[in-house]
Length: 91
Image (tube, rainbow, N blue to C red; front, side, top):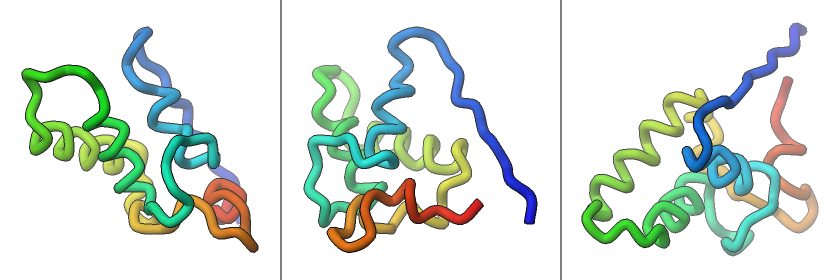
């Protein structure tokens, strides 16, 4: 088995921390949310009024593809017995 590391780099304010928070269990969402929902909620809470929710959801889908996390996009963020989703990812 080989391990893989992915670096997430972008300019200041590009939402790097916002993307990673739900995956590491640091979020304002409910533990019953899945990764995709957490990202959508976060995107929709942004105060950029001129961007529609449809465009924000499309951006979230793009993030999911870019980070290659499609396999966990519909996984629960946190399950009480298992901890955060990040601790349950396979290497």
